[in-house]
Amino acid sequence: MAISLTGIRPTGTPHLGNYLGMFRPALRLAHDHEALCFIADLHALIDVRDPEALRARTREMAAVWLACGLDPARAALYRQSDVLEICEVTWLLGCVAAKGVLNRAHAYKAAVAANRDAGRDPDAGVSAGLYGYPLLMAADILAPGADVVPVGRDQGQHVEIARELARAFNGAYGEVLRMPEALVDPTVMTVPGLDGRKMSKSYGNVIPLLAEPDELQRCVMRIVTDSRRPEEPKDPDTDTVFGLYREFAPEGDARAMRARYEAGGLGYGEAKAALFEVLDEYVREPRARYRALMADPGELDRVLAAGGARVRERAAATVDRMRSAVGIAA
Ligand code: TRP
Image (cartoon, rainbow, N blue to C red; front, side, top):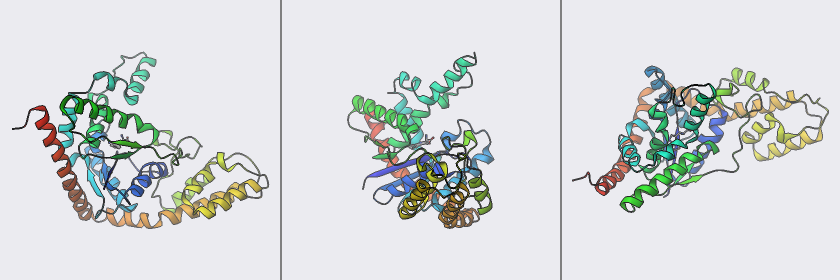
């Protein structure tokens, strides 16, 4: 079975944008792939300096994966940091990586551009970890030998870099690494946030995925709409409320809602109430499962340990091949 791989950094409470962009596509792939799902805690170290917070967020993220339906009997759920081989692969890849490839990575370029604009040294505040982010991510992908990596548009370049590094390594040493493919799902639109811009923690416009009903309702009521009155026809394709509704409602309901938007006679208040109903229903079970998991740390630990062990086996086989290819194995 082909292997799919998804990593999520443990950065705070996941929101609907994370769910639609990452969790849901990964869990769908799990139906016909061997799904490897991990929490990228090594990547988080680039900007998290609070050990307790990192530990807590990592556990939360693991619980969210399981709450959203990851079946640990089939898919592997693991902490990146438990697979020590990833660090070794990072170094081995770094030795065949052109430095220029890292210079061109979006996140690094954005940091440099911000420094230039502010008149600072171009590398001010840029850690070697941030600079090396694409190497570590390539190791995440290449160590277990992933075939497909579902990504949003922002991560496409990273998968491209992983491919480039696999090519460089294989070019130097023979066919050692499996070539991964990025899987960009065209049906995953940019998920709109409360203010209509892309839902993102940095814009402060998110709807938390596992919010309690009252918080969820408050969020939904705060969604910004245009000022059309109830009787006027509305454009479902530019409206945030409908944009979210259609992702979570059964298809027939979404079609009916679209028709009501276009016909006029539906107020935004009513549309928001419908969205709240659908979301609340959708997350009811995951919310309860999440609470139960967070109350039972032993179960989380067992799942993570088992997932880590499974993936280490794969990664260790890759490392063996890489070591002997480069000449550091016995
Ligand atoms: N960089 C990804 C993000 O910020 C997280 C990630 C780390 C990842 N390693 C990965 C995603 C490997 C896919 C495959 O969202």
